[in-house]
Image 1 (cartoon, helix red, strand yellow):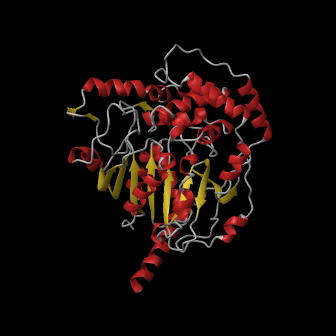
Image 2 (cartoon, helix red, strand yellow):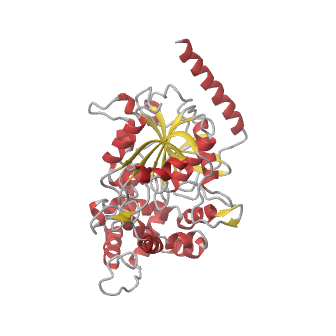
Image 3 (cartoon, one colour):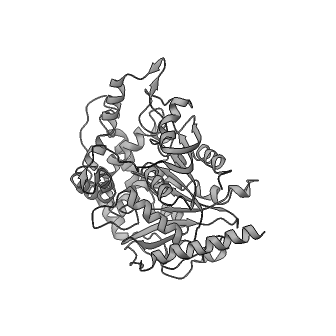
Length: 448
């Protein structure tokens, strides 16, 4: 009993020390998309504060609700009605990029049937907040479990994704229900990266994944969490890795999916021919070359044309998802459009693309690598989940769980869990939520 009391006192003192480092960070005015600056939302008042946190709304944090102005929606409808599409050669399918027939069908649905206000209400069922960190207005979901001993878990996404990626798992992770185990409950924090969604847009250079990782360390301290786990996908992998390196005393476990831990391509009968890997990479990474060198060039088109924005984003969702040529086997049109809408209504096509530039220019100098990963080896316990279609690997599948497949991750992480899941792609929490949650829970079960 004394040891537990001493641990709580130590945690409390640690939070106080970390909070002093945050002094002077003030809250900036909320965006035009509507924040409510009351001390507490009615929903938040009904939830008991977690035993290992500060009050539900910490100092410098205000509640937020998504409220897109009617004028923005009216302008969107006009633009969709006047859309001009590119031509397409016969039998192009998706080989040249976003398929014309599918894009037209989605735009028709978007213009005539899609109901943003309904989706807005669904998103506003989650507890959302804003605060200012490192000079940027930060938006985040902070959904607390009713279980008093639930563990804090930070969920991080990348491009071209948003908070939509985790909307199917927020309920089950905060309240397992149906006989679920109390220890499988989590207090969730899901932030929008600087330049993404309802967060503010940086006005200076240098907001790369390392800097964002340090921002999220401050966010978790501000919310009063002395110990927490982190999950990352896409850019979230690099951000989470930086947090595990910088805040190892407080990060209890790291869970990753994707390129940092899934091994190397192979084909039946031996190693993949180098030409296949090279062609595959060139065919699917052109967007990285553009966004990491000249993001503003494409950014103006993404800001001016909703159809252009949809085409740019859809190409990645189609290429990186696990389906047999039918994207809607994985997602509904509403799923796809709500993610696209978050980029459109916040005009964050260009500002989100700039993260590629920042992460390729180390101290303002162009790096040799397309993606610069954090240096150092992570000592925090790490679990890795790979999904077969995280990138376009249908003809070049991932290795099974073998020593060779684990080596890249073991070189960089304290790897205690490694699993390749049978189905899923780049956005598995939305595409295969049950499978994704089962692996995450199984890994975190013993990582306290």
